[in-house]
Length: 542
Image 1: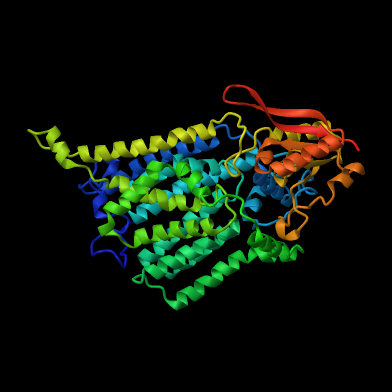
Image 2: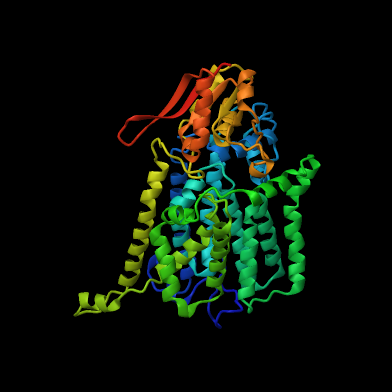
């Protein structure tokens, strides 16, 4: 890939893909001075990138099928199966719910028949590895080959990205398209060509078509252009780009209207706007920094500080790509573990830039070699060691996350639900067809529908339309349904019980009132190897 385009903000003679301070190391870690060295360097960089991709694939695929789907995974997989006409799910999961359908449409070819879960996760793993690979040319364009390689390495083993791209969630594919959007925007800034501006709009449209909340990245693009007046942005170009963005995203509302579900998106938006907070304000501060990696955050912040006098449009772009989603989702009352995933790409680029330009105290090195000159390869070797330390600091918690044992606690978006798949399969094999199940909340109800093929209701689903997801059907009078023998089994789970002790106690009250009998229990081992019940299935009678 060429890195010789002229940027409107770069000094004459400076290469766009690199900065002058990033070419001082050895081997693939540097820019050799002899003629033709760039051509020799490229295969070595591709070899390192291939090794990084292998590591990324291994950590994402390791024990991928150890746990069954969580609630959101069950919903998206169920939509894909219904879209494919899978008779097992067509009656239980409507095709149109809340989000656009691009990802579900890509999954649907794998969900034509039977119960499918592993294949869906493999598709997401492919998106995760593709994002790691896409970071490399983006880093090359912004800062040079070394930054691209280091950024790809950090993303490959970052626990936050790894955990999310092992699940059938919209966020992993969305970040892939967001990375391509960022790359197209960089190409536009560097070459000022209309083609790349239109490509930016098209990729942003695909990003939004994967998950509509990524519309906040349009705010990042606007903020960057507003804060970078030296970037040419003619009105005619913008007027040409906006219809491209609108035309691609319009696939979502048009498809809903043609399917007779034109009110689905509107109802969901009303519910989201009036929804009560589901986590405290410090939720992201408590959960995201450790998942991203404290050393990665320290490197990104440190690099911004010690290169503050060399700041350019590149840093403005990456910081706006981080700041807008962080501010939006922090103010948005509904919070989710995976919502901030779009910020990891600019974050690893800033961290990689800092690591390859790390100031090394040459005075201390001279004291170590008082009678001879400091070896020329020592400074890049020190930087390489620091990169290795940061990568290992990510690899260890990443490995713990993917090599997990059973858990008695669960954070939505952080992985599968222990015992959920097994409980659902038990219901499918041991209860009559047509049985109806009551659960604490809609999360376990979705899992029961997916693995158990049984209609299920969540007790906590509010009968007030303003306080419930319009995709869920409330049970207005559970007592009456029990007396009429319209509910046959009750499923209690510890994960929902921790989130809502009130509805957990109410469910257990119904179990006692209607002669509930334990027919199946799922256990996980606690750290001291004591079996802990996490899911209990009761048979109830009027």
